[in-house]
Length: 136
Image 1 (spheres, rainbow, N blue to C red):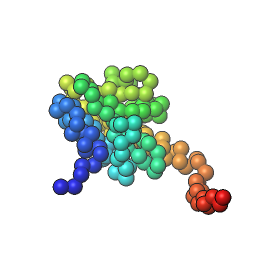
Image 2: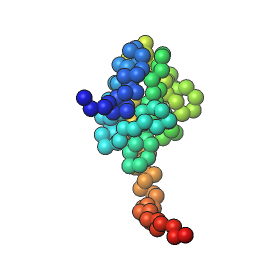
Image 3: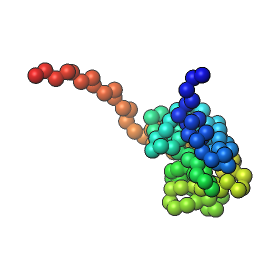
Image 4: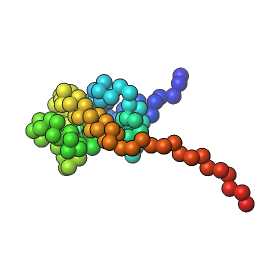
């Protein structure tokens, strides 16, 4: 049997009550970010889009979290996010209520648009020069 993808292993390591919400959160993010690479960063799942860490999600005993919540994401969804905010850049979704899937879709889409806008204004990155071995 092939080894589990690190993100699958992370989800399976969560408490049973958390796994369902976390799997749904991950599937919703993957739907909006189909070309993003799923990796583990800061010991939690992350969606990396065009080399940029777009969104993180994590599971806990009583909630699942979505990070970062940027100003562009807040502007895109308005007051719908207010009940879920915890601090400046964290959304917490309690396990005892259904996950607001449409809100998660809107947040992820806003993050994609934000990243695309940033990438459009940046000068193209040149490939790194290969280093020559040091001669001593």
